[in-house]
Length: 518
Image 1 (spheres, rainbow, N blue to C red):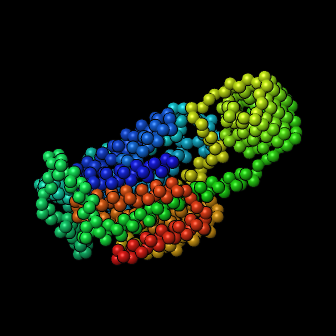
Image 2: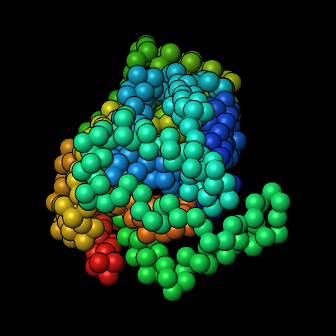
Image 3: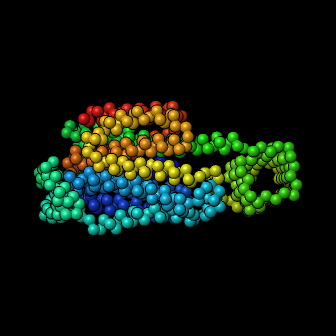
């Protein structure tokens, strides 16, 4: 649910901030998107209820959605044409490092299993809250680093600030020669292509009025910028780049849902097969103070027994009898008492309730029930493991780092069409992957070409559209793709054969669009 609402928020943020970056400036839009993301991420870390938390995450996702189009456009415009592939590849590398850092923080801060999560759980500031708070530190560091950056020179030219733009160009030219590319690289680049082609340096034919002085004109231009993306000049580029990005992102987010759900299903099947069944026996004067897990009691009688300071996970008591039994400080997870009899027993300081853990057919004679009513009805799963999630994230992060290295290759060495064809050929692996490690490997292998496609679309947007449309175009493409991913995520996952077929079809559609883009 958190990922679904994040996709919806990211879709809104991408299209909104992409258009704002074209009107208010790349740097200003990027700063505001990062600020919104950071502020609401911090707020989410302190939210005590589920509804408030989801609303804060939604607002934070709106900010994070605007980071992608503004960051790609800003980075592409403040670097020379020769150094642009390296700079944009650095963004891919940073995303991979960020995912790796998130997995490392989760391993260090979060409880490793469901039992410890239930014990550690606090109403207002649990380990998850601390984890979310720590994850905002990179966002704050990015905000601070942007203090020393300059506005995009292409935006300055668009709004008629030619003098400021020329100053920025001079600074970039000096930096490219000395610090970034080196003199040898500049000389080689001059033989291949100019550092800034004519479209980069030429002044706009007509200056655009500033939004602050012409609100009505600004709103009109805001909407016209979207319609111009589908004019005869840019229609084919918009459809092909948008289609490739949409289908590649749909594959990525479908796999990010299919792989964990498949692993969870396999674990549940193994867990269910190991269930212990105890029937038609009696227990007297026994004391239980350790976790009871995956047990089914049928027609069992407990006399003068004590259940104290313990956890019950996936335990069912069917038609059992409890005489002079004490339940004290017991936390339950997927525990059920069905048709059971309680006589002269006490149930104190537990989360068991009549109508929840105790069904309507339970009988309580001379029994005291005084529990701790939870703030909301929740069933924490004590069988959950954090290491599976962090392992999957680690595989994906390393795949993104590999993709960032491959992104440095010339585009002829990694054409879009070849990447899409590779995705089609890779789809049968989804069906044949039957083990947890195999599923993680398949997802990691998928992530390499998917990341390269995302990077290629971003660089092509910067190179194919004029400066006034770049951030708007990229924001619209990311927004539509995120909306499609949210629909796929909300639809759930299918069986292994159907999942392989769906991913193959999505990849085939992307292949057709990549072929037409040639």
